[in-house]
Structures are given as C-alpha cells and as structure tokens.
Amino acid sequence: MDTVIPSRLLAAEDYLGAAPARLDTVRMLVVGDVMLDRYWFGDVSRISPEAPVPVVRIERREERLGGAANVARNAAALGAHSGLLGVVGKDEAGTQVETLLRDSSIHSYLQRDEAISTIIKLRVIGRQQQMVRIDFEDAPTETVLRDKFTQFKALLPSYDVLIFSDYNKGSLVNVAEMIRAAREAGKFVMVDPKGDDFSPYAGASILTPNKSELKRIVGSWKSEEQLTQKAQALREELGLEALLVTRSEEGMSLYTAQEVLHVNTEAREVFDVSGAGDTVIATMAAMLGAGAPLDLALATANRAGGIVVGKLGTATVTREELFGA
Image (tube, rainbow, N blue to C red):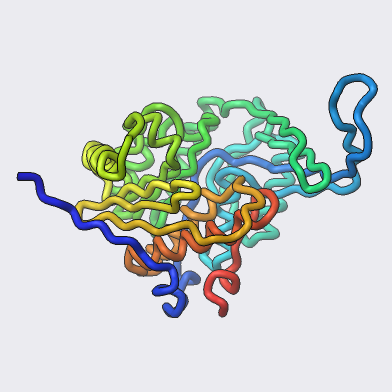
C-alpha cells in the first residue's frame, strides 16, 4: 500500500513573530539569462491619426536589472552577499547592467560577448498601464558559453547557495553540467526552470516552476490529489529534494518526500506580477542558506512575493519590509 504523505497548510500569521534570519551570512551566486529592463513612462491623451492606437508622450525613463540580474538584486536587497554570472553584449546596455550591479552591491562576473546585443525588455507605460513591451534578444556564442562554464567552476568554492535563473534565452544550455558540478561540490542549488523539458535540471535541490510551466511538463490535473501525485512523481524522477510550485492566486505548494506544505497568497492589491518569481526564489534561497527550516522559508518567500506584486515592474523587497526590522 502506498504511503500517504501528510499535507499541511501554513498560516502566515504563525511566522510573523519569527526572528529575522541572518541573511547577511549567505553567499549566493546567481547564474542565468541577464537582461536590462527599460521603462518609458508617459501621458496618454489622444489616439494616433495613423492607426487606432494610443499616443504616449514620454516624460520619464527608468532602467532596472532584469532576468537573472533581478534575482541577484533581490538577494542583495535582503542583505545576502550576491554574485551574478551571465552574458551581456559589448554595448551600451551591457555597460548599464554593470553600472546597476555596482550600484546594488552585486559582484559582477559578466561575460561580454562582442557578437551579440544585451537582452533588453522595453516597456512603455501610459497612465500606470503597460501599453506595449518590445524585446531585443540574441543567444550567446559558444565560445563565450565555454568561458562562462570555466569561470563558474572557479567561482564555486566562494559561494554556498546557487540559483540558476533560466529564461530560455541561451545562457544556460549547459545547465546540467553546472548543476552536477555544484552538487558534487556540496552546494545548495535552486532552479527557476523554463521550457518543455526539465531533465537538464535533474539533481538540483529545489525546482520552482509556476503552475503553467508545471502543466507543460506533467499535463493538467483535476484535483489537488492528482496535482500532488504528478508533482511528487516529477520530484522523484528528477531526484529533487523538493519541488516548489508557485500557483498565482492559489498561493504556493512545496512537495518533499516527507510532507506537502501549502501557503495561501497574502491578500493585497496586485499591481504588477512581473519579476515576482525572481523575488520568491531569491528569498527562499536566502532563507534556506541562512539555516531556516523549510516551512519558515516558504512562508517568508510567500510574504515577499505578496509585497512585490504591489509594486510596478521588476522590483525588490527590503529586509525591513519583510521582517519589520
């Protein structure tokens, strides 16, 4: 007879009085697809005479770290010692990414690829509403990716926690080798996955797909029991310690061999969900790296995600916002 794995719903209020974790002791390396997020803010007062689209008169511009760089930024905002390994172009946008990393006290190990342009996501915002997003992206060259893997192995002794942030832009084509090297070195590894095949992430400590990403791999489910069955089967197949599924308005569920933990979304106004997954994985990894138990780490990551969706664009949560101290 199959063993029934206990399931537990975490009450957020039970964790509010917990002592803040020593996140400043965590050394975290983020590896993945690095992007520059550009925001153009303006006023919309008329429709274009050329086409039935609004005319946005740009009044202000902002640039923020995106993709894997936003994960590193979130970790740094919590006080962790954060490093970033990735690829950008040898261009103005790549230089801007370097500047933003320096401003956020993130150690930069970026490879500059002359053959590509830095990935840019340009969002045009009119009256606090995103009107359009324009993406510019190129995949890194093989030579640069080889250099990056060599650098990765050299950096491993300096970091305890690793996050692989995969946006399917080409920087993590050798992620299986990197995970293997990290685990052999005794490192804790979390992965934010993408795509239709999760097998390259086998052996990681924790995988963090969202609901739609998980459906792409295991198919749909009709009940909580069926979801648990599919999630546990995937966890076992990939040899993971845990599978964390972010479920939008349904909160988050963490599947381990010992138990299933659920936490509900904290009620607040949702302003922008972009980058929320970056905040969740950075917070979870930082908490676990600081020695927090799984349930406390999950509850804290959920709270961080709830805070960041109330902010516009890719944003961070501070230690003060999270712990009130």
